[in-house]
Image (cartoon, rainbow, N blue to C red; front, side, top):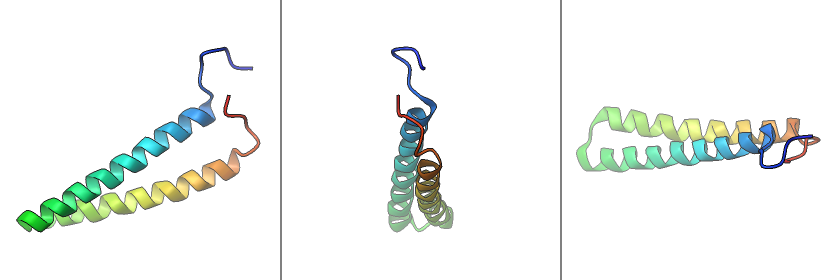
Length: 74
């Protein structure tokens, strides 16, 4: 049983992956908007890659939640 005040590995994983998803999509949108304004290919590639990473993280999050469904959040 975990000590009081500690977060389980499952809960930490959910928080960390959620933050990573938000960061990936945020950076992707920012890069794509910057590409629209400046037209640099690197910004387009970075934006698309970041959006794809965000989508991949969503798939990963669903898979890990399925795998850890029997483990408590506490």
